[in-house]
Image: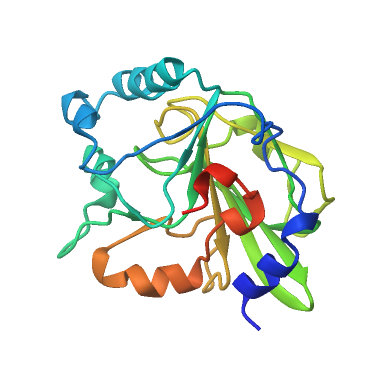
Amino acid sequence: MTVATILQKHQQHFNPVILFQWEKENVLVLDLTAANAALHTVNLSSTKAFTDYVFGAMAKAGAAVAVGGYNENRYIYRRSEHFQQKGEPRSIHVGIDIWAVAGTPIFAPLAGKVHSFQYNDQFGDYGPTIILEHRLEEIPFYTLYGHLSLASLEGLYTGKTIEQGEKFADIGNYPINGDWPPHLHFQVITDMQGLQGDFPGVCGLSEREKYLRLCPDPNLILGIRQLDY
């Protein structure tokens, strides 16, 4: 049985990661591909300009939160050399982003323990990052939380128990969060491949199928109806 199958089976039992009334309030699905003509007018190398664009689009839509990104071929990664690897740039996003104000609390969707954590301090990287380890039906898997506040890492240690529904982190602000507009990068990982405190959230086109297998759709946990693709 795959992790995706197990998550689908347990979908009704996960705690919200962000306490937002998805069914009742307006949610903007944010397109960050090259098809979004508005992005071509934004100076993406300026985090302030990028933040003004994201939160301006939310205000225009009357939305307190924006979401999206899984399996999205993104234009925005041209802003950082972090995604420009030799031979093939990385542009396929394998998590879901929840764009909301800095300080928004983050809760554990199910019980687990701290696998690892790290401050990935590079322009365009995750910034403060926490990875939790979970087990359902004896199958292990992991959830990654990127672009957090530095305070989110305080008091953590490998193996620390995190209860379902426990508030354990907050959305960070730039420049601490990897220099991004405030948001949570949420990702499901089936195999950490020996990595600690970090895992690719973006891959090249040639690696797309590999990483989609390694990182099934996070909406199986989030349950955001606006992202029913």
